[in-house]
Length: 470
Picture 1 (cartoon, rainbow, N blue to C red):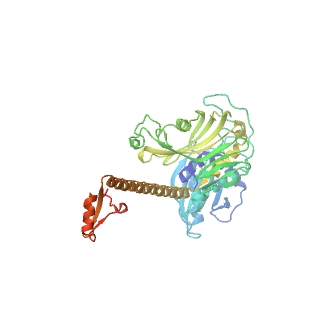
Picture 2: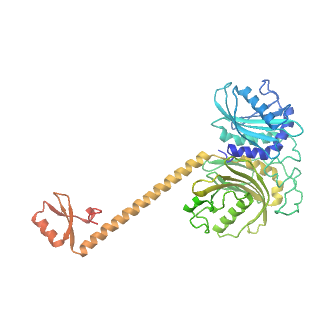
Picture 3: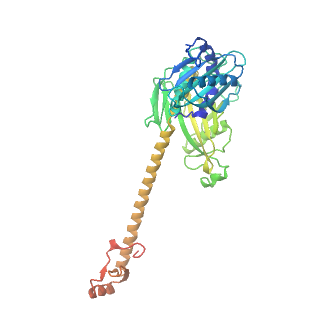
């Protein structure tokens, strides 16, 4: 499943579809019309990797709520069942409304379906709607590709200057201008013309836990457990699915893992109080990770933070510059940061989707950057399965080590007892009638065995009984 799970995907839709659905209301005017009432005036796209996409203008609707209702009404006509809508998310301008829904395809094969409904109603102009839908069991793995396909289709129309149509919008306006290179600076970078998005080649992770679309010439450094690092031919680099475990030193439950709150976070953790603002959390995570690696502190300037609604966590887009102190100078970055809710023991997780490069390059490739972000998919179930296998292997290896250590200690204790008997002229004797063991002097043991060899026997070292003979 993608890192943009259903809740996260809604947030991404709010951030990206202000421009996409504006284009959609234009593109729908020339879309191919179906004969059915449910899809009249709506363009239908069959997604190659699964699912269907419906989009088009919604006439006579003045609010996003009305437009979404009309969009879902078309779904009910098409599938013969009333969609069950989950929690809605609205963007900051109030023009976009989005939500996930479930519906049964009663007019078709009767299978349960899951979909994402989006509606756009500007204060002036035509309203539009879009639906991404697939079989419920397949939807988590196809929603990102449908989302990408929708953007590609709607992107055929010209983008309005005010529409933030990609994840790179903060550093590249519709005319291709780069964003400010430092927080608080009023100096803007020189205009850079953004080139069309480059075609992406699908790269599968080595362990089957995900995939990402990369332009030609890019190389992956690693791609496993949902975590991928790659670099481009012009100095571009990215790391997506980067999971950073965090401990909240202010949470009393964290005392189990971090008894001394003034000390550094344990192991691979970084210490950040939950609820710290996005820019501070981002900088602190990098600072602590570089300190643990004994590297010079990076210089980070955050120019802009976008808060994207997400139930059950925090979701941000951050834009700015970073200097790794490696001689390459300031790099422009775009990063999505998803923070989970606090877990047991006062811990939480920060997940980063981080891309950076020379500012000129990032400005020119703004459209490509915007295409790469939604191309990333992650199979969370497979990641969990592999992690569980690794945990079980670790437990087995630990148990094996403990067993070997216990056996070694047992052999050592037995050997020590035998050496002690030799030095003290003692022998362990077995009474075959009672099965009892007794340690006595060599002389007495010899006399007992000589007098009644059928009853008394010497116990060899290998037959010493733990807890009795040693």
